[in-house]
Image 1 (cartoon, one colour):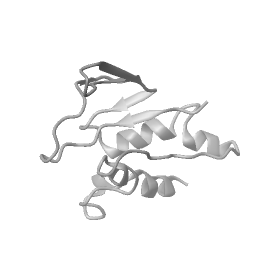
Image 2 (tube, rainbow, N blue to C red):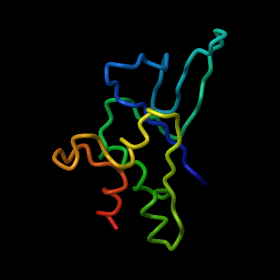
Image 3 (tube, rainbow, N blue to C red):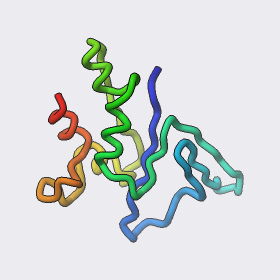
Image 4 (cartoon, rainbow, N blue to C red):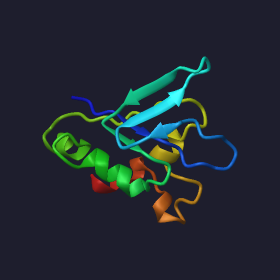
Length: 114
């Protein structure tokens, strides 16, 4: 079964917080008409979560990407979101990478594991 994750982009001081509430498996926000919307995920990564923590969650365990690859299955990590939502940061890395190893994204980290 596909696992669905959400990652909240670290704040850069320019954007206001989008979510009213989040925990390990849920995001809540208010729509323009005032309705409370709740979305459930297998895991929600908050803005303070490090790249290594995201990598560990998506690669390990029985449903992880590395387990699937080693068992001969195809595996995909798909990043989706609006412009500026943090897809490139998560997948390729932050502006400090390659100088700052902690900013290295999922793609170069996965290649290192393979």
